[in-house]
Image 1 (cartoon, rainbow, N blue to C red):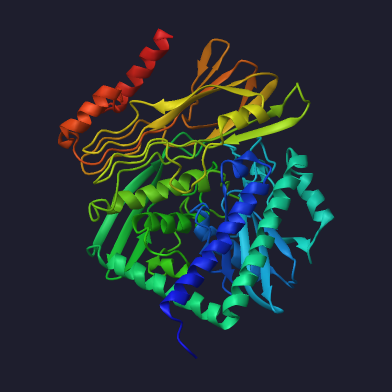
Image 2: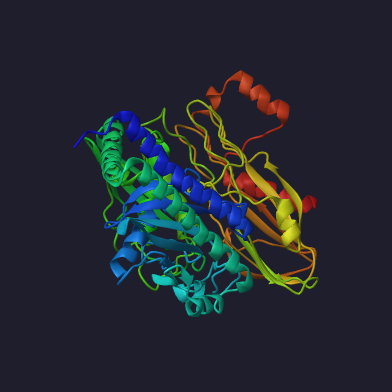
Length: 564
């Protein structure tokens, strides 16, 4: 058997990537929901036919889905009694390789010349899957059933035809059900695009050649990752990252991380983290592992991504902690929030060992806000779900990016013009939050500040965010960014949530305003080392930096309220 030359291997690698990129593009263009079509909260990939391991994923897919879709595909493989061309399984069960219930996965067997070659899968964030509150981000849920409809792997499509009975069960248990069929068709169509493109690739290079290339690419990624890990000095590295609260009990949760680095491998010990919590900030093991995978990929972005990338990483299951959620623990905050604290813990632990590669903590929250109700002008029900950016941490070379997307994804805030067109809301403000960045030799990036008002009717608001108790920490002497702040102003009164960054079922009337300021990034290095030129620029543009203590932050907020 002839060896695969490097050029052919590179072309096949990029061909597999392109299959996933085209699935991503098709999904976005056909989706109905702004959170997918504009916010890009989705991902597509190709997975191994027997193990479910990652073969390739779209470049613009959410990184947090890199690991979790491997686990969910494996769950489908384990439970599929029979498969035929045209079948598509639907699954969102968090405990079967999922995240939260709103991340709905489609998994499709891909046949080539009558033989199962691989699986194609994608994930889309549905704006609602039922549960206690519109949008699914229940801040006070104490069991998963309160968060929405949980689906084990079932065939939604059978030999290319949608199962109307299963579809009716799904649509009968979610809000704005009439709008979901657009996302369902888009999700299925993306997989059909993947089938056609992957078939073309196999027709061109042959099944055996592509199979061998996939194996070589996996081994190559593992070898490259081991070489990168070998550059880290052997030793034990520790950090602690804080989750504000679980939404039910107003006490912080600790992600206590010990990284044991030996030779070309790394072990991530989370066993000393907080025990399972009552509220929805528990993390299922698939999300916990995926958060570590993406953190290491952030540190070594040049390593190609497939299952081999993660082989040198050992992650013992942290049993008895909130990072190994078991049924019926609620989990709505795991993918968007807890995962970012896990990644932050990895960054903080390795900052001293890799000062030229690492950076201070980013904003670390997706800023999940959902507003649901009925628009009296149209008579239609609605659920508006948005995410917002924040400041990135400063690094050895640069200040942090302002209004960057979250650590765990490339999802972005949909254009506010689209939101105002689709929903009965008006954004009075959407701006960079000057003064939110942590000071340092290279300061953090700035968060954002926005104010959204309900224009008519009544609605309910719920949000699950984080970094409201403490701001994103700096490294190597850098200051922390400002924490998340949320205020709801109703009839001249201002309401600040008890849990700071989490609440649900806030009744809104026309004219009520929700004010949000997302965190700034942490600073890198001692502020006294900042160059005079950069200091002059900060002063000239009136940027300002986060104050050094939270007491000063509170005093400033009180002064602002008094002035108003």
